[in-house]
Length: 269
Image (tube, rainbow, N blue to C red; front, side, top):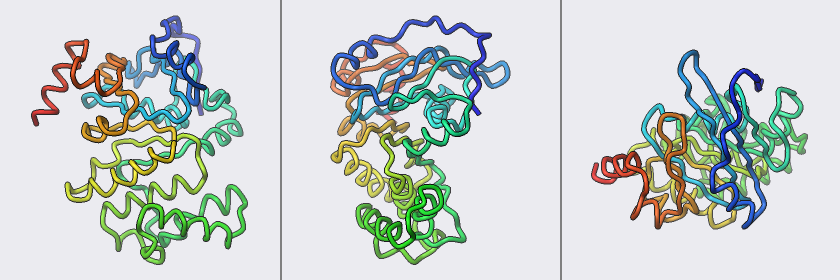
């Protein structure tokens, strides 16, 4: 599924955070010179990024900046045109077995939940462990119930997604992603489809994952969450990482004018 055409340059230098990450911890995720086009639209322009194991990265930026495309490339949901992605030492390639192996290491939570409406909450969780990992059903159910308790909705196990609130459905989606025991979790604007009163319950679950040491990449405009839990905040614009800094620096002393303009809009909204 992943194309790696040689027709576009991959000569972009690695960003400074790559060197810093290499000095301070092992890389869970390595992205080098990543380019992606949608027709004539150059959506990703030579992205290079290292994410250490256990690191929490929040990615923000205006609509169309390439944020969601970037994390969708990480688990093969989007093809990229040139560059390299390595997940826990495994290169993402066009080989379907290799792609399946990497996807088993990477959990993904979408803004629209993507639960199977005809299955109960419990069945949504056990589907992949039972059929993909060949876990015995009883064992898969026991693990699923533990995960539902972890996201504080164990009592909803026998209900169908349509019987739950949006916040509850998103917590089910997080539990379902965790059911495969991923080493990296990707979140694509997980609260953007929720009513304001439901946002906190989902962010609270994500904060618990942070405390557990999960490696996470989170695309979000929830700047309070970024300030509280992120190790680094990335600002993307026009397919590039414009700013990459710890929250203490990102929010108080951004270096780039595009970052300053974005923050002034989103923080004063």
